[in-house]
Image (tube, chains in turn purple, orange):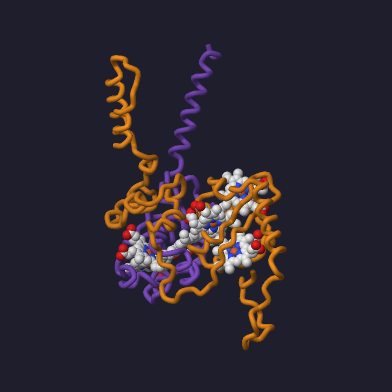
Length: 132
Length: 225
């Protein structure tokens, strides 16, 4: 009897394992190369910032941000304060109401879910280098 | 549509059901997805796991699908073959905001991994310099001399060297063949030809007729042949 039932038990166990894998971590389907910036934002009472590479690379080559404007190529490596942005540095070099809409639109940048860690995200085929 | 027309003219053996079969085939083709490009799916922002679905941004920001669907398709990363999208003029990203970066043109391919078991890697400077500045790679990631940097797949997979960008923003590391793209024999032949051309050419052109320049001026980075 028990001999016969074993395969069934195994199958049930396998299904449970599958489900636990699927439901264990909240799935992130973020677009490839989305970056969360949250060194200070949430602690200061704002939503984390989500920066979409796909949107910006349609309009600007990497070197504009990563050479001309001096963004370091390491998620979390740039210490960005809101006062810098208002003074025209970092995101503020463009988000000044001329090249792009201005700083007043807090919610468009501060759009992330509470509790997101800083880092790079991306759903397709890879999760980024896995360090920041 | 063309495909449907062609089928109607294809002569099939005269069996009673031929017409029927043709019609069926046409229907199938008409409803079939025209190309794999259309099977690409992007998660809507409200479900991407990053945006706060109750915030105002998800209703205002552009959806990835709206911007990326018209671009040259790929099967990984953003599902856009960015190199083609740029080459074909589907996008025209700005190269500078205020002061254009002044760096010389450099288009040489570098062949890497000549001694491994995987196919040889062709590193194209031309493609990278469209997007990047020399300073994004030289000299903190790679030296300006072939073979001088110890590049390894292990470090790449950890997000170093090529992996700084590939696997993060540029196409992901799952696409082995896009880097490991040259048969070893072909690579060795290419290098041999290069050597031969260098040997055949008259001794490397001496600096042009003396101008006012001091001869001992330190060479500008990357100005070498």
